[in-house]
Amino acid sequence: MLDVTVLEPHWARLRTLLDGKGVEAAAYLLLGHATVAADPWTGEARLRLVSHEHREIPEADRVSASARHVTWGTAGYMRLLSDALARDLVPAIVHTHPNGRAFFSDQDNANEAELARTARNKRLRGLASIVLGGDGSVVARLWMPDGSTRDATWVQAVDGRLSRWTATSARRGNAEHLDRQARLFGAHFNELVRSLKIAVVGAGGTGSPTAMLLARLGVGHLLLVDRDVTEVTNLNRVHGSRRSDAEARLPKVDVLEREIGLAGLGVEVRTRRAWVNDAGLRDDLRSCDAVFSCTDDHSGRAFLNRFTYHYGIPVIDVGLRMVRRPDGGHDLNGRVTTLMPGHPCLLCGGFINPRRAAEEALERADPEEFARRKAEAYVLGSGDPAPAVVTFTTEMASVAVNELVAMLTGFHGAGGMIPTRYRRFHMRDDRFLAVRSRPGCPVCDTGQAWGRGDVDPFLGMVG
Image (cartoon, rainbow, N blue to C red; front, side, top):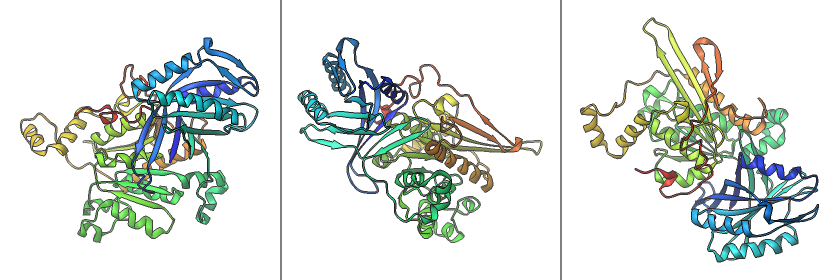
């Protein structure tokens, strides 16, 4: 399997190639890569390519262009190949068919075969090719090191919205139960949702309703990640849980898998009892189209905060803070932050405490050292259990899932997902925080991580 993701601002710049009044145009990309040994739902190997850098064709290289052809010299192409080799990236050429549909013509086949041979001689991973059609269609393929080609199963553009072009028909199946939402968003919405592979990290107060809502929405493939078992104190907010589950200490992910299965909605569920940053989860997460971060720890959030920018896989992060004030009043706050290249990250928003994230990671990796440092007051340690009320946790899960719907439909604006929505239940209002990326932020500001894909060490994290 092969799929290609183009991120903003790369997609915006590629779209301008179609503004040439019917004349073909071209550009270059450098793509990061994610090599998945086994997709958790199909067991198949998968290669995902994601845009990392856009480059114009140098003016000196441009030769001629018309409604049926575009020609350029190869000096800039050779520099592209050299940079791809030095940085372990995949080079890509993009050109347009401004007066019709996107497809690979006989002339494309002949020209690209020569370009691919040059890439092969430099021992690159391959050469990607993308065609944009004037009718809005998009196709892509990868010239492999052995000279063969592999067509992309789908190509997608990701910003606040998700636009996807598939080479094969979407999974249809029996969707009678989705008729009412098709009446609002159209049958294509149901087909797109059914094709999605989505992870929910955390199966507690926000994660359990999120998983249930996604199943009811028609998501075809769910990955549920949580290490904890069901306890009596979870019964007030974990959807689907029963007292017998707490007595048996049944894993939370097993509770959700059982309840989703009993609904008979045709959802393919995979479960993992692990921390989200466990190395064994990397293939699973890189196979997803979106991730819901419903974890309550800073370490997991810090991991997903980097993950989304490296792979261009949107992350929707949910947080709540409920406090009883000394005067007897209450501060009840919920937050949904959407993460992707172009949106500010959790660090810039102040939603992650780096010290707590490091301490949590230490507690998992070396409990004895954590205990020693805690005794010496070098770490904060865990505090009292946070308050949790099912109505508030469930409401924020609904807000989060609606951001996914906004990404697919644009129902609350052409920009799609809102970067950060802050709900103050006690004040009866929503705030839309104008968080900005901090200059020099290594995660979301510089663009160095955007679409970088697989690197060593993973996500560029040391220690």
